[in-house]
Length: 106
Image 1 (spheres, helix red, strand yellow):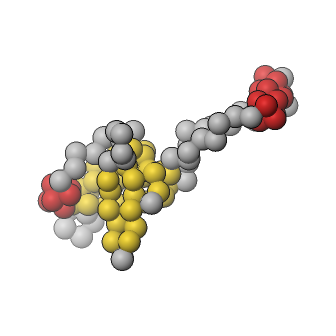
Image 2: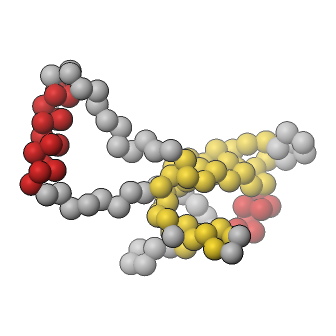
Image 3: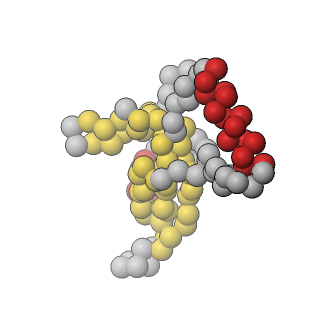
């Protein structure tokens, strides 16, 4: 099971049929580890170097797509979910199938 977030939803046109559809991009949500004293020290040093221009800023929200799905409007309706950007799901991969589930406690 992987925690994923809807990163982008784009309207697309199927080049073969000319029918409208959607491109849905999911990125993995990394579960954060509670900071320790050493992690805080390293983070502070990096922040200082970034403020001095010696270290490039990090883009924490940009991630590599985990799953990209192209669906026709009919397929999107059959999905039964109204996906919105920043929605978070558990991506379950089992027996050759992908399943999106709302995480417990959400």
